Length: 414
Image (cartoon, rainbow, N blue to C red; front, side, top):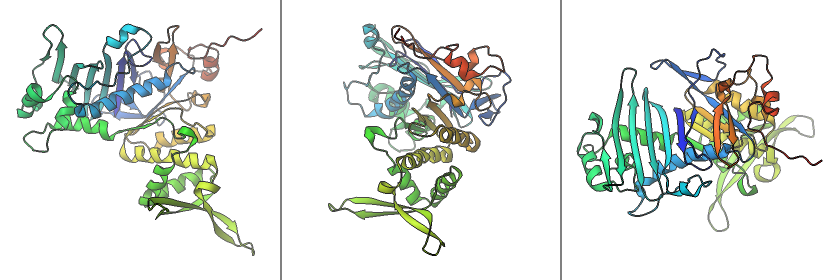
């Protein structure tokens, strides 16, 4: 699970900010939205929503998370001298030469890990992996670039990292544009070279983050993953049909086939079945072509269900920008409620404009975050739990009145 994320000099975030999925201890009712970590005596949130004005930086926070993950997954592939992708804050020119920071707090194998690194386009400046146990903390490794010597200074390696692989990585393999963690996780499969903790951390980033920025990019709904999932997995098909029935869609079945097109390439033929009546008034199943006869709203909703199922079944982290885009607000609310009720260790982080969820009967204060933007275009973020708010206060009205900030400033014509 993701415990927290910190970043600085990243996109619209110049100063360091922290986005936390650790539940605040302030006595609010649990709802269905928390997971208890008995070993640490804390709870983790299953979902969090981010509000704010247009261009305030909501999407940029999610993009920063994905930026950090992509660097972890791809840095070991960089050739010597190849620049790193550097999404620095452009509001001050000096930021281009300053490191961008990423910090990920993870709960993995019943342990709190913190993995952090900073970089520019030319090099990694610092990288560290720590484990926080209930009674002590362990620095597995840390390397820091010293510009005076043009070399990296290393901490003592933990017991788990003291083998020939670490020595070889430090002295020979790791380049200035490589992350040590990524290089360690991509060593050959020889057992004497493997570093299990590095593998586990890397695999978490590789397998546990699902990012959905826009399911209808370029005016085209990306429903193929959902249909492919239905076609190969009967349990997935049952899940889709159950949700469609509960949300007042009239689809009762799918018929999915792959046939070659004129060029010999595979082409998916998708049909849905609805209930109809024959000439005698008897109930029958009527076939619809999914691509041409189902509504855009139906296609969109089915497209959303694929990442939902993959996240819930795999206990992953789902990151969604503009949840419910082109979807009725009640459907968005249903999907979020479904996620919170069915999640065991899965998590959902999303941005939203619709204020129906800004309600203490649906979300806790620490699940709702507000993004602010200053006059220079720099973003900050804070949870609603930072504010002292009367229990009977209508949160959505207070938000629209500017009590929490995060709303657009509009100059109205006289």
